[in-house]
Length: 202
Image: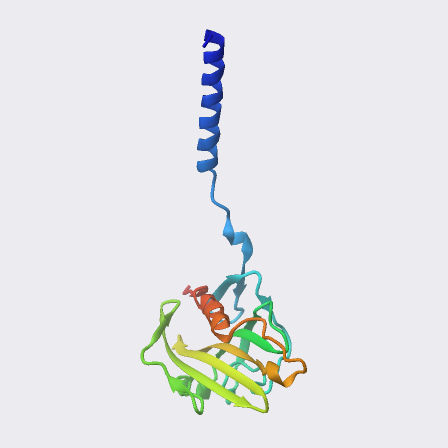
């Protein structure tokens, strides 16, 4: 091989090596651009969540739920944020809801379970706070609702987090319709929102 050819080959090899290094050293993709953050106006908390989730404002009601601030909406409270999986439709809808109340009765009964709820065997830690958890299932008139609820009193306020998968049996349609996701998959995706909750103190 001539001296010129050897020099050319060496130069090409060096360029290839540098190119590979540049590719390996490239900065990772910034996933924060794909997340939104909710800050509560009157409560010391925020929620970071996947930006693909749909934030629902205004009134929302279903066969089992009047769209209030918690599943057992028997005391004054405020729905802070309600998120919906984007594939949700009239067959199956998946919701993540955070509500809060400073009402004395709501705080006193914050950890009481709704009727027919099953308590989880241990406390669940969310944002560093111990929450009482429960599961709840209901069905009627071809409708269904599966829910997980989490309750805690933090600095004098009752906080309610509800994960809800609900809808109508696809078998009542002609032809039968398929849900956009399984109930198990929906719950798994809703659980990830819990990881984005943060309490903060001044």
